[in-house]
Length: 384
View 1: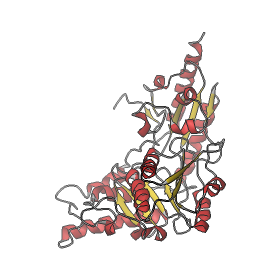
View 2: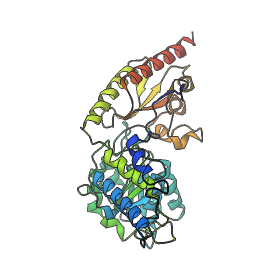
View 3: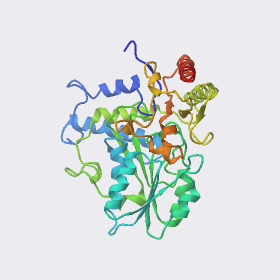
View 4: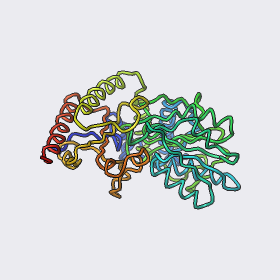
């Protein structure tokens, strides 16, 4: 792609790291580890099973879980579905579920389905900074609240939810906490041995791994309630049937093993790039930040461009970025996250998400600032 625009859409997906590709290739082709992990009667299957379990250990080590608490899925969408539907079906009668207006459609649409099945649902509105506060969750609790589902890092805003504090409050109440952590690995501290979380969804392609593979953490308080959603063979301790894709699983394991932690060298580099990008863009006339300026990861910015003549399509030839989540783009609708934040539809449509990652360079950041500067200036000049 010699004329491809510069990539600023890491929140949508990340390029697969070359080191991940190398490990995946060891599981593709008849000369390498191609066996079915469920074929325990011969060496090919046994070798594949060993690779799968090593990857499970790698993912577990990154998030502070036990390997036997992780279930392989096709990605965070399936993980979210399994977490919510699987737990809901573990109760004899529908109860009350709490989520927020800011969640990914993989949660909101699944919650909507449970609502049609009789579950009562509270969808919390964010505060003025775009945050879901622990005290708002606590205030929404009812005697029949069974489950709370919130994301760790908002995929459009980059804002953080204090899920650990929320989890502690839910433990006292007796409800379970599900956290969508698709955007969180490598960006925030995750330690499932210490944090009061019962279910957590993960995706490989948000952390420089392959698409089509994810995992769900099922903690001890949730295990007896969990019901499988895909049947046929009893794989994954009966929670998710289907032949395991060894190459994708190995790729996810490697990606998680390579994922940084807050404070490491990669995190510091991204912090510096993000500061440069944020200061450069917010210095432009009529550019404002959507969401909390402090409680956030540096990787993702959501900006409203107030210039009346601005159209994000003017950036498309030089910068690859989003106006909303990738899952919302197909509907051409204004972002439900920004509308929940209080923006009107016009301002929501004038907002863009800019996200950086492992392979973003300082030169690319400077180029992006210049492209925005020219586009904002051109949009303003067009009115005169």
